[in-house]
Image (cartoon, rainbow, N blue to C red; front, top):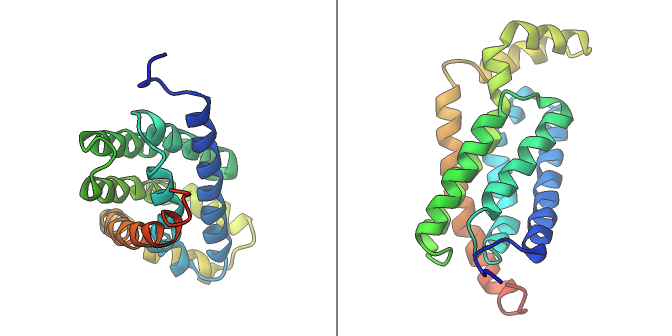
Length: 196
């Protein structure tokens, strides 16, 4: 059996950790109803909260394709939870790139794992693409969905053509910060328990 090919255990690990990341994303998504600034702050909230489970996931990754598959599942989940298809290419792209970065360190290099997760974390910015590139219809949908004018105006103040690139960069930065913290937590608690 080719040890480089993905097996049932790999698929199970991807599924379990994708579910955990979805829970984090869903919780962040619910908090976004409180204030539109929180939606923009997903670039910090999601990478930081998902860092520990993702760093634990990285300890299970030994083959190319697992991180890409994780990104693919997230893209599918985003589509079926109403975010549409527009962000899917970006999510898939950062998945492949982060997989390649981790692979270049044989999935064991700490610095490359951190950078890999920084790149992977940019997936959460993909949710902003419909807001920016279909602004008029997105605004109409929000208004017809009983969001207040104040909320809608605030959302487009925080997420627009001017802020999109900085938000993407911030998602990478907070991904790196989250990975550093996450690796320390995994090493301190999960490695000692024999989980990682």
